[in-house]
Length: 457
Image (tube, rainbow, N blue to C red; front, side, top):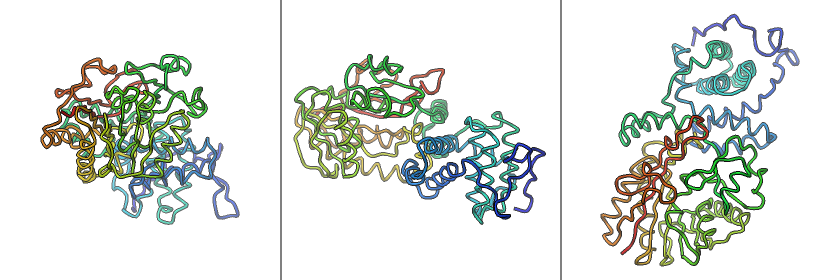
């Protein structure tokens, strides 16, 4: 790029007098405070966008040498950048008229991270600019763009939050799919809702109302406790004692739809990390928790131990698991997880349309196997944390067409605290991020979830 814009007539970041940072050894700038945090955030975003890695996995690896405060800051910066990536890219495209060459992909990430800090966080503007410019200088492929990074981010800071356009903040194929599935207005509202960070939802072992008061939270109609600004979860009252566990309000509903009772034999397929297993076991169910990942099952076991609960744990592929018959089978199937983007903004950018089709095939196999495990007269609940009908409604339609011995057992309004608007015409659960409206976005919404309850003849 030969027409790199010159920096506006502002003070340079780095020193109160506006001069450039002092040189160390005459050649390299002094280490900019907070650089390691921003480097981790930028590298984590690149891991998501370039390699499709989960954000948490990338951050765990990249922040090992940081203290807890810096790890939290890196996570906040990366998650905020990904949550508003569509809007941030649109803003920056308008400020870099000729665009960036392919070799400068990291420059775009640096600009996104810098702009996100300036517009969407409490990070001081000068820190966002200085660290982005310093990071550009570290890489030979981006060092020539330091002036561009400086100029663009100073312009972002000067023009302020009004410069950020309204979404969509997710890929076009996702947003168009939601508009087709739920209508243009609702599809756009879903996209907007997903651009807000979610609060923290908890499921209490018992006495949810008491724990909501103790934790300073809000008790939702479904029995979930919702917190805002919870801080360190492990330091909250009740964590060490196993009084509650983290679980989105929508994710807590499929297990409740089984109405588990003492002595009821239940298979929880694709069980890890164990929130639904905990619900079933806490109700007295004799639970068999099945998952193909031994590592994830270790985490499930740790969670159950903390909660003082137990289940039979089986490492097996849910699509071929042999057992039962069971009074009930719960399938929370592997899916695209597009309903969880508020909590996991990387999902919007690590998934592709072909992933939905591949996952739909796996879901069909697991659902068919789960149906075989249900005893006559028993119940099957199938669920996914996806907004895509291919992974929800259409899976159930296909199973019912193939298995006339199953029928829907519709969910009634008010059952498990579920309002009528969360129930579709077929009597299935369909929650959306736009549900539970509230003036405070952190108090509003829940994951996009689908669940259907079926009875075997």
